[in-house]
Image (tube, rainbow, N blue to C red; front, side, top):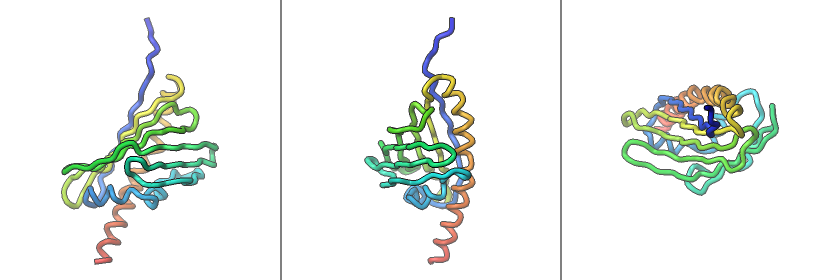
Length: 162
């Protein structure tokens, strides 16, 4: 017998970067967000208040599809080994049903970190959830290189400023 349970998908991507984990987390600002815009589409950052609990991110996609995406930052924190914040979608583009994205920066040593994008999502139904997996994976995978390039450049800029 086959039962239709709600299928929840998870994608976790890791990117090693240069920089102390606290400084890397402090760099999750509008400039980094602009650098992470997906190529090939048009997206407007309508509102970006930050990466702390209570902040909001509002995106408007113009091309190839028109859609609004609003996420609230529901948690943030820091300990001796990692820093993080969590965004949860409140207004999502079709066909997404739910979205939770944990942004984690883990300490490797004083000068190196790993950025982890841990995304959990559902579609409006089981078929859409399954179809979303490759689309989201392909959409977020380029972030690894963007993070590395961004933090390499930030490290170089900081060294020049000394």
